[in-house]
Image 1 (spheres, rainbow, N blue to C red):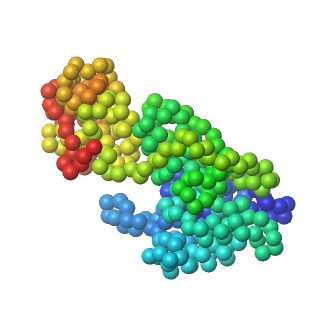
Image 2: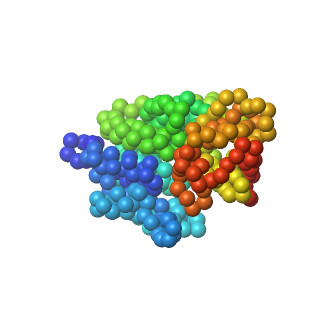
Image 3: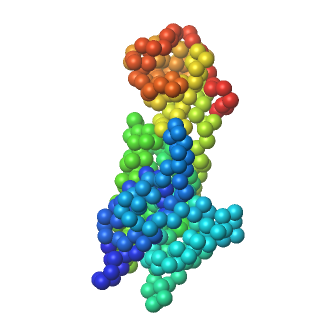
Length: 341
């Protein structure tokens, strides 16, 4: 991957979670010179809540790549000192392009300007390219994979976008669709989208160095927003129809995990599927208890619960769950305490 015959492409990579690590690894393997990695500061994680480096930082350290972790990038903001240090590092890196994937910080205008200004010798830069996990303009925003599943979309995909100051409003450079399978949840679809995005960004960088990327403005129609997933959305509203409930179970797996109250316990529901038509029972009423699935009435139709988890326990298939949990037809499922749908 070379902008000219005598030197590799110099890349600044900005990303934080596993989705971004996959792309960083692929760009690095393609021969780009990673001159700087930007990632979110270490966060408390796990039962001990010890500080843990992001997936991107872990990869960077393992491959001896320079890392910066500013808490913010606004030069006039709360973390102005961090932003000023990041600005020095970005300018010193003298990169040809910045690739951004699920970074978690909004890039202010000064970053865009720095990556669009020509090199000191007049060579052009490629700006800031973003790997976005949807077919823009559908699902701009923070949670495109979750929201595509929740909405019942048949396809999602990846868009490589030229970044501007708007929220995922930049021109499209490459785009590729990906089917959403009936059993996909956010975890499984995330991995597929991450792999697709990693391959697509490598292709985009190759085309960009050859001057062959086609720029397409986003259409004004079809814009939707993938708002951040909130914990309260985990609560299952049994007055909804079975299809909507099952899509939410898939969309909120692994985070925040759909939940309901059963005999006073908050139970996570990790897998469920729509069943036959409902008999008119109120939503949340347990209709049948079988090792193949627990049938629950909804506002329209029946949901078959297939994988559940008690507080502090493991995820269990229904047959295993029922060995340690007495459940009878006629019981009522409800909302977890403190949560509203």
